[in-house]
Length: 265
Image 1: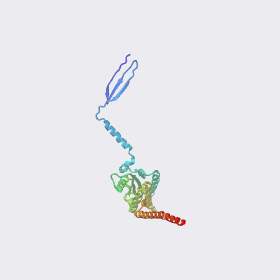
Image 2: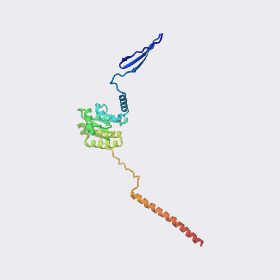
Image 3: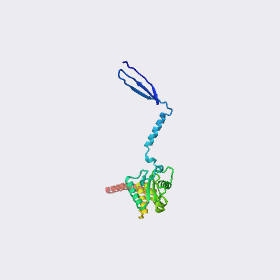
Image 4: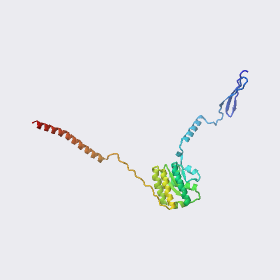
């Protein structure tokens, strides 16, 4: 049977298909389909390239780089006591703080939430943002507080409802934020900043002694240059030494010559 070539064109959903038919007694079909774009809404090559580049940029951006207040506001009431949105607390810190804050709530009824955020995009005041979180997370509840740490600003807030704020007191609030948070975050000791702050709040609410605030260590820079007075003093000493050596180099040969002439007479 002679080979026959059959070409069939069918357009369905923008596809153009070509078939190569049968040969001899056995039928073999090969279908080669090529896309035939008929929809004007199909993205162009430039649009596809832009979308691919945008997707790559988003995928390559670290999660911590976009961590801001919206991530915290978008979530509901936390099920745990630690919301480390800035990813600066290690596992040991989260575990120990979680246990300590759970015991505090069971013993006193006060709940303290700890939250970290990398930066605040639209709310520049940490206390104002902290109040928003407390209102959203614990609406109508009392004895609820929040320790907020903003890592990029090296700032934070200790806030809560009226009952919580009254029990803590303004002095402790100012000291925790101004000392524990401020000093330790400047040194990027975020775990210590949160842990020491929580310990002071727990001590206050349980009637124990305040462990106290950290002390700011003033770093003294060592001077690597000489003052004008030191330079002048060294210059005078150097001049004296040079003159002395010159005198010795002149007088000693003269004395030697004089001694030699006297011995020969």
